[in-house]
Image (cartoon, rainbow, N blue to C red):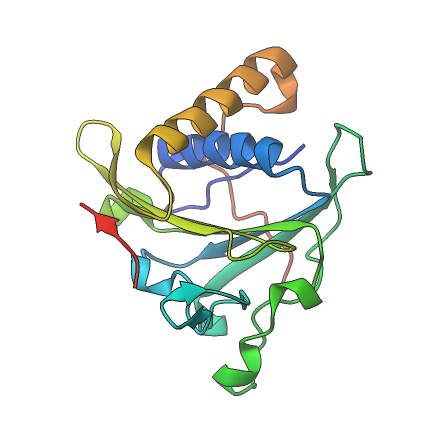
Length: 205
């Protein structure tokens, strides 16, 4: 089970929405590993493909160089090829390391896993009413996208890069259907204590 658990300052409805989008995305990507990283606050689309652009196109994707003290936590999930069940596997290989030059942090994601989805999402959403979600896939030529959200009465899409809103809604609906089919596999996120192990695009507003 891949579950996003809100921290103290996270908005539970935002966390539920991105959980559905991520689960729907993962089904589409057919990966065997997933890394989920919580970032302390909102981040914009400029983080997408940082140090990964070559001649106007995404080439070799590298880990975005978030300063490690911005990282609230990291989770790693695995499944067997052809299997449907995801298992929590601790924090996995560290993606953001303290005491290392930022260029050194820019490790190609293919060196971490040949078949993984890497997910970064923003915290503090209960306070600032803005949210971010970014997804990379290893083993591909530049599969990466970013979406931002804003809460008015409910959480709405604010902008997206390298993914269409129609695709995001499709991912979300797929995640919702899996949630309904699986029942307790994907429980509705409720606010809880932080449960983490230690440790040129077109942008449409």
